[in-house]
Amino acid sequence: MTDVDIDSSIPNNVDLAGDRRLRRALESWRPRFIEWWKGLGPVAFQDNDVYLRTAIAVGQEGWANFDYIKMPDYRWGIFLADRDADRRVGFGDHRGESVWQEVPGEYRADLRRLVVVQGDTEPASVEQQRALCLTAPSLYDLRNLFQVNVEEGRHLWAMVYLLHRYFGRDGREEADEMLERHAGDGDNPRILGAFNEPTPDWLSFFFFTYFTDRDGKFQLASLRESGFDPLSRTCDFMLKEEAYHMFVGATGVGRVVQRTVELMQEHDTDDVGPYGGVDVATLQRYLNLHYSVSLDLFGAETSTNAANYYAAGLKGRFQEAARDDDHRLLDAARTVPCVTNGRVTAREAPALAALNETLRDDYVADCRKGLDRWNRMLADVDRELVLPHVGFHRSVGEFASHRLSPDGRLLSEDQWSAGVSAWLPTDEDRTHVESLMVGVHEPGRMAGWIAAPATGVHQKPVDYEYVRV
Ligand code: BYC
Image (cartoon, rainbow, N blue to C red; front, side, top):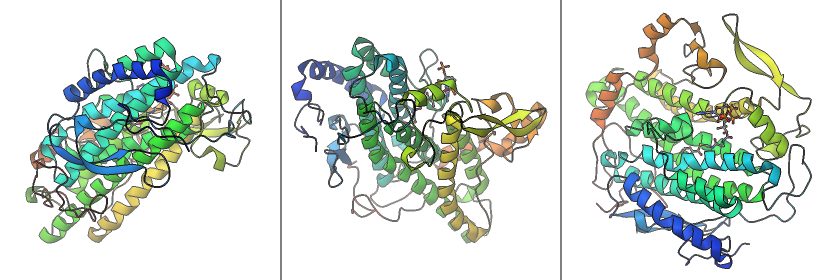
């Protein structure tokens, strides 16, 4: 077990007290983080008491504490999962060697890039979601939004710790730049596409936490396999918190679906908009948008970056150890989708080069599970939600230069223009969804477009005062 220093100005289990230079460097980054949080974090409720979970340890039992806290006072800490002294690199050219406790010189640039890309997404999502607190459908949801936000802040701390501790001066500069790029900024945007898209309403938020946070799950799980042990242990612990973020998305969309079904039955119509609901076609369009934007986050179908990361032992596959192969992939091949002679087809590619696609496949399978649950409710009204074709509305990789319909047909530009209003959120959809967004602040009460959750947080009732407003 690693000792936890919970009373330090930066709670940690990485012995900051024993490294004065590092502690002082992080302490000098802290005011800039707080300034960023106050300036670009939630636009309101910064002085209210919020019932939040705070990480305080890394063991199986009791790793978090629940209490009222004002968000700027949240104890953002640095926690790495416990070290396994016998851990070995599980894949690539170094398979079987002891994992590294310091950054190998030859992999420094690649590792730094991975840490920076990962880190950049965390504050980005907080920025994207900053105005949502004004229109939360309940106090329960408001609290969940803030929980997600403070933990994304902690995930930024996790990456900033790695940059400061292991990457010297350029690491410190990268840490500063995390607070200088901003989601959607014309001059200095966030690194990955999906993190520059606005999250203008709660329906978008739930789909974002379902689809985009799930990319986080798969990327973090791949980085957890890393031969660079501090990165692996950091991601291992981040995944604990990440699970809740996806729960917020899965149950959030599920509650909207439930309410839609209720309204359809009550009024005997598909068109629940006039009754203050979101109809299934609109849900499908929001799903199409967030799913396709999240698919882009896995990169191109074949990537020398991905092959190099794997060969070097920096980034593995999802659940690497459970795979029944040589974990080097030097001679392996697989097919990847492509467009040839006006047809969507597949081509063979080296498995090493196709690792982004392999991770995307795992992600797609995981996405289906939530849909199955939502569709069990929708079956009562004879409707269903579907995942669009992987080539629909893509901006990265093979499909970026083609137009595909959600069912995977190649389209001309004219056909696309004629169909797009059925496939992606329209201005009308957005106006309607926006009209439903009203803040509800009475404990236990829900806005009319969403059903109540089945249970509250941490054994508290649904009508608990999760935020003291
Ligand atoms: N937008 O070789 P390729 C999370 C760039 S989410 C813009 O295929 P690679 C979270 C790419 O950088 C998880 N650019 O790329 C969720 C490359 O540029 P260079 C975040 C893109 O490197 C919710 C070029 O295109 N973590 O935690 O194989 C809330 C060629 O592409 C995009 C990670 O992503 C894009 N979507 O794969 C909060 C893990 N895609 O090098 C948090 C770390 C690609 O030619 N990152 N490009 O200049 C990685 O492993 C890889 O960087 C990527 C890209 C998988 C993202």
